[in-house]
Amino acid sequence: MGPFELMDLTAIDVTHPATELLYRQTYDEPRYRPTSLMKLRLDAGLLGRKVGRGFYVYKDGKKQEAPEAPAPAYDGRPVWVSPVEAEGSAKLKAIVSAAGGKLESGAAPSAEALILVTPIGDDATSTAVAQGLDATRTLAVDTLFGLETRRTLMKTPVTRPEFTAAAHGLLGGGSVHATVIHDTPGFVCQRVVAAIVNIGASVAQARVAAPADVDKAVVLGVNYPKGPLAWADAVGPRNIVRILEGIQRVTGDPRYRPSPWLRRRAALGVSMLTPEA
Image 1 (tube, helix red, strand yellow):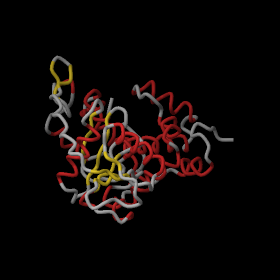
Image 2 (image 1 turned 30 degrees about the vertical axis):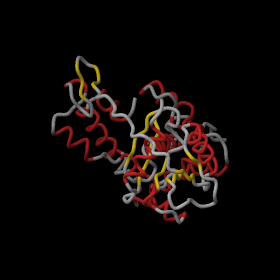
Image 3 (image 1 turned 90 degrees about the vertical axis):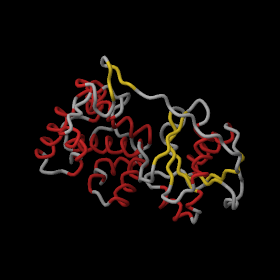
């Protein structure tokens, strides 16, 4: 269950006051700052499942979703995958090849190539600029999450429509669908998971509960498949720190500053579930 479906289940008229209370009780700690979107939806009466309409529409308690439009056809243009993030690049190259993409092997893309990058924590624009790539042909792909379930493609503000369509068709035209989003640091899943991990680390740092108990509370309380600290271990604590630092660098928002507890475990290369000595 994603964050919006979860808010529909708990109801905005319950969730929003609770988030405001937590924010006040922590003396305006930025990590807990509520979003204005919840207040707007509360004022509009879009409370969630119990009234039949929230972030989703519900009928007889069941979420209603429109059929997904088919992805455009891949037009056969060559594809160049940036080698900068070696692990993500290798994963993406394998997917492109399996989908029938025409991979280029040169050190730089040809003048006609679709350019794919695999940033961790950065947006597509800053990645293209840092690597000296043509932003009008560049899209970023999240290789940390969803490659086998729902692929996320991120375009720059100037990515040309034909390159967006080619990437969408290539990576979302088969059994695994793709979503194209606008430029933002950390995609969707990277940002959401890193923020959850950071809060879990802050709770452990405050010694509210032992690391294993922090995870147990989240798994049992909100039915997450993993607790926040186990998620960090799966993704890599150093990747979580990179994501948070990237988002904070682009946005300037202290909400994303990494917890010192998280930083130490990432620096030491130990599991996030490691208890204090």
